[in-house]
Amino acid sequence: MAFSVGIGLTNECDFRCPHCYRPDLVVDRLSLRDIQRVCDSIPVQSMYLGVGENGLHPLYRAMLDYLAARGIVTRITSNGLSTAWLTGAELQRFRSVEFSLDFPTEREHDAFRGQGNWRTVMDALERCASLGVSVTVTAVMMRMNYNKLPALAKVAAAFGANLRVNVYQPSKTDRFRVSYEQFWLGFKQLAESTRLVATTEPILAAVLGIEGFAGSG
Image (cartoon, rainbow, N blue to C red):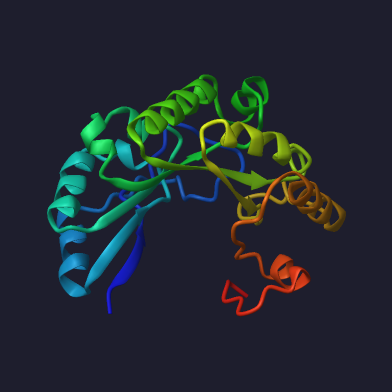
């Protein structure tokens, strides 16, 4: 049996998005030896890099080189920074890349996440598309954007990307949580304007009557 491992090389990030759940009171980094220890302890088939902005780790490139040398498939979620620093060949080693976008316009997105991030993500999406790297746009459904997700899906589709939606779960604040009505209206509008590829949202799966659902409870 081979394992798919989710890991964060660092919790550092160049933005402080108000809805983020990552711990940021202290900087935590894994060492290259930590990565090697994981790979030596269990048979790792693939590794997903999340949590912080992994490209801020000083050994980011060395860690990617190590994983590639072991034949481990890698995926990453980024705000665009972690891919901007890589060469085309390095970027193509990722099986897939997810870029975070929460609003369908530059003005709304940058006001929420940080000035200039929209352009960074657009450039990253264009670059990945030109290199043949599989991309996904990842959004967090919140009370201020639940009705904007169909428009965001169109932005993703323009780059041949899927849209992945995570429903906001309160961690540091409750002010972004969607109401019961907003939750269902948001998914209703998405279902009317897009095609569902997969879901790990248990309530949605139950309503849709998806058989053999094995998502989180």
